[in-house]
Image (cartoon, rainbow, N blue to C red; front, side, top):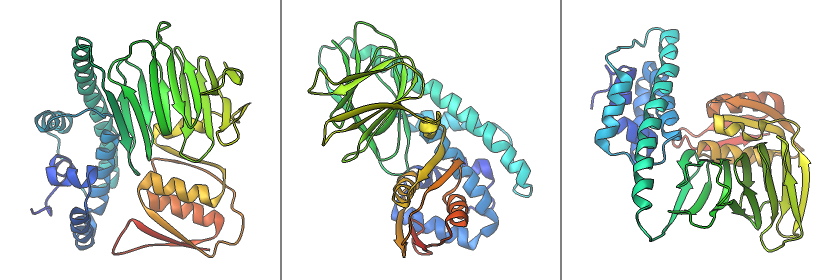
Length: 341
């Protein structure tokens, strides 16, 4: 395939390019790495197309057949042509394209989810659905009751295909929930020994395996308590309210976040608050699907910063300037990052 004459919309419409962005493998990784090295003038355009496709893939988590996907991209791209000579012109088209894409994909996924839910309601059999995101991926999931789950990278949820007596969700990792009201069916999220209960509200849960659970309320009201205890239950009814649970010790404490930044990841904004370097390393590895090796770290790091839709290199540049380290991206494997203090 000759990509030399490709413009932005050509990359977006090309199936092999989209497969590399959404479902990369070793072969496609090395092809595009070598192609960009040989064609540096196209790098900015390729990165722009990649960001648009990643934005599109963030929201739908339902299956869309290839014909529907082609029709959507045709609708998004239209008949416009873009030139690579003007950086401002290129960037000015990125956000409208991404916005149109998100809207169109959302409409299709919404219609398909509605149809699937309607068919499931006619069946008495209940199966369990598992949705999992590996590193570098986020997704938006519509539950059988219409509630919405934003699932972060390196996270997994499990739920029934049809809710009967209650709406029970099992979470490992981090997710943000927008719950549809239904007083007859309590909404329960179980994570690392903690159960969060809500009837209609919005909240964030961070519960990675082996770590303490953090629950943050965005709106509405929730109760939190240990799965096997009826006594130790807390109520959170103010936005920014926070519950922390240490499963090994069975300790539940209530407090409040200093601000509402704890769920900004749903807007593709990376936030650090007085973060140690272990937290920074783990977050970047999950966010960008990379492997980081740290050398000669012999002091405490406490970093605060916010990065809305930034590339990994820009994030590393800003953090390295403050924390005084250098970094190197492996030329043979761009997912391998070395940091030197």
